[in-house]
Length: 394
Image (cartoon, rainbow, N blue to C red; front, side, top):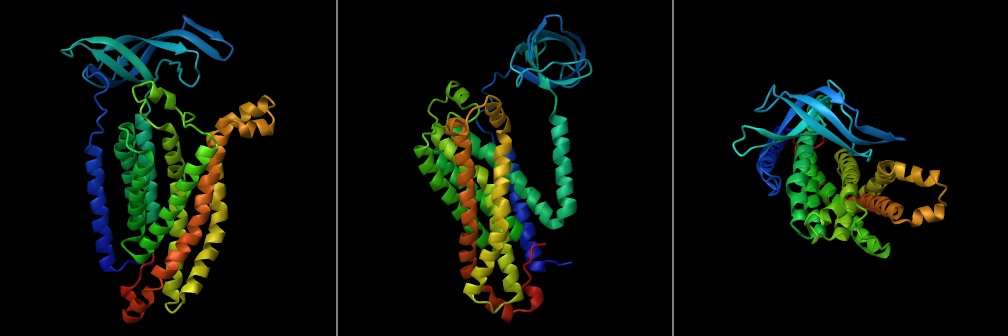
């Protein structure tokens, strides 16, 4: 088993602790939008005791009307209180839910000013938070057990990335900051965090970061150009019109769409950059006297092997998100020419191809940068004992 030298362990631990503290600060950081909902609301969990479906009407697959629900509150200041609530069905399958006795529901209670009386009880949806937290816990446990120290660092980068998106990127976009500059800044920070947490402050980390970010910039430039050429206005993004009608008419949806394109591809870009950089570093470790041109060739060879599966991964990831859209048009016999000319499909085609193009460019970028950055390690390797120069990822 390969072990890290003690100085590397200390620096990795210090880096991990730093981002743990930063993640804690981000968790505490308010977004500024917490109080847009009236304060006289209490959120709690309830269990359905009885239901009355007599007022529900069904038209084919669609249900409309009102479902009467009796619920016992199981958490919060009104625990064990029994309330009667109404569950309206709008005839929209993706929004409607029908409760049954025994179901756990997420409740939003409107209360009086003194918080002593329930004015209105809204069974918002099925309660899923406990399952989501359990799934997150199992994921974290599996990552740590399988990945060990590297898995712990990967988990930290995952948590920090999620908090950066929710606490920094999303509220800043709502405040009207330029989506491209903001998103590029956030991606740059997250790329640096992920690369340096995994590889440490090393030449490998620098190589992977530079190659990945150049790939992201390539995707950004292509997305800007082709979004304009495709006449994509950005309103095709889910709930974008809802934002405009909710007091956020200042948002530039087209630029937000461009940002979404390269953000969506950035994870695969980082993965490929690290694969190439780590492979090149291993080559240098085995052959300290290798020339720059030979190392670049090795990096390109690794990149060619990996990029084929990575671009297919992006295709699967994107197409899985709109598979029902493709099914709907095929079921109606829409010709392929008509299909791919529609803005909904063109939007996904642009996202897939631009993201894949940026991914393809990561390998040569990383190989070229690695040729200049990593070859410089050979002098240090020849002068220092072998135990002091191991930098293989654990």
